[in-house]
Image 1 (tube, rainbow, N blue to C red):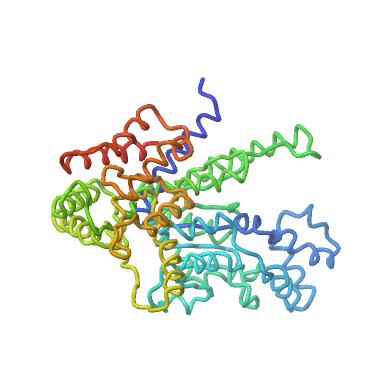
Image 2 (tube, one colour):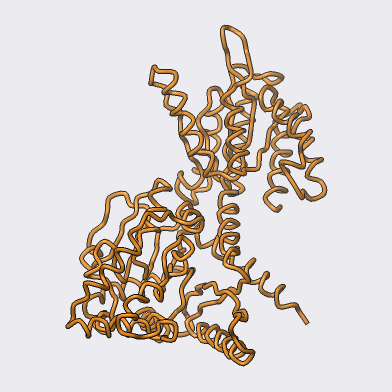
Amino acid sequence: MEDLSEMDDREIELFIKDFLKEIREDNAAIFAGAGLSASAGFVNWRELLRPIADELRLDVDKESDLVAIAQYHCNENAGNRHRLNQAIIDQLSVGVAPTENHRILARLPISTYWTTNYDQLIEAALKGAGKIPDVKYTTEQLATTRARRDAIVYKMHGDVEHPHDAVLIKDDYEKYHVKRGAFINALAGDLVSKTFLFIGFSFTDPNLEYVLSRVRVTFRENQRRHYCIFKKRTKQDDESNAEFENAQIKQRLAIEDLKRFNIKTLLIDDYAQITGMLARIERQYRQRTIFISGSAEEYGAWTKSTTEEFLRDLSRALVHQGYRVATGVGLGVGDAIITGAIEEIYRARTGHIEDSLVMRPFPRANPDEAVRQRLWEDYRQDLISAAGICLVVLGNKRVDGQIVSAGGVRREYEIACQHGLNVVPLGATGYMANEIWSEMSSTFNTHYPNAKTGLREQFSRLGEAAEKPAELISRTLDFIGLISKE
């Protein structure tokens, strides 16, 4: 009989593969619950209501219907919810930074976020990643579009800075379809057209249950597959065996019930595993982008035309194999790289240029050397951090009439290592690429730990002289193919 942990691992592997495909096709969406923000240091809903329950002389730890507690407090205060509003402001407006999970999600090209949280961690993470979030927390905002937005954040229960409009009490839930019905329609549309990952969500929200039910009834067997992550129920210190068994049964039944909505549950042993899963998705997504670092005033053993032919054909082959080429348009190499990529893009006619080629020429107009170097450093960090592989070619420049190795290419190699890219130095092209290849050859296990058999041999071949460009292209593609499977 198959081990349960092995089954869970296999399910996670299949999820990563499927969700990565949806991300690449811009069909992925995130639904964030309170659990995503809890690890940032915000109190959970129960703790938020603890002082409110104390006023009512209720033990919040013994209550399951927390929305009812909020309603009772409002009732006891003649419909005045000022204290509830203040609790939200006090607890959720403190200077808490986004978690690593928030940051990873923000870096991925996910354009749709839904949340029942009031905090602003999602939009803060998106801004930190250099993106423009279009935040919707009122029905009126659904009709407007922020210019050049990168992601939409639907806050279906409101925002911390507008607690008087937040969905807090039973009255709010009961009138939700009237006051916020447009959110229900928008969510139903996304559930039909996108693949959701529910993170930190308990599926006890009555609004979401209503939407899921409507989608299920409408589409029946044609529902889209979604995913959620649950932590396996473990025995608590003050819990009897009977109580623990009951909790396990309840979790199993809840997982089975979610299948009605085509939501597949991934079970984990520890919440830290979520970060690991998201990091793997990001790493594999970045692996399809290859940053080519290089510059050339001279071309070594090959002529200029032969080298340009090599770079053109290499870039064309990478795009043909589904990679996206990124270049800073280095002197003497950038034009050939761009030409090869665009030739293949126009030949295949399978997508937009931006899907296969990122062109970011370095800004050179500022006469202040110090300012220019600082700008180039930020520029390099931004460009390289979005890639998964760094390909190094040539790397020389002219200084005072002499040809020397290019320090900029060395810096790009260092940044690539800093961001965990797989570095592929084509030592056969000489100059800085050969220096880096020699260094990596002597510290190979540091750069490629746990490498499978044959990878070191293929790496060695990257530094061997090649009579014809096609030979080195073949070696390069073989090596990239191997590391892509690691």
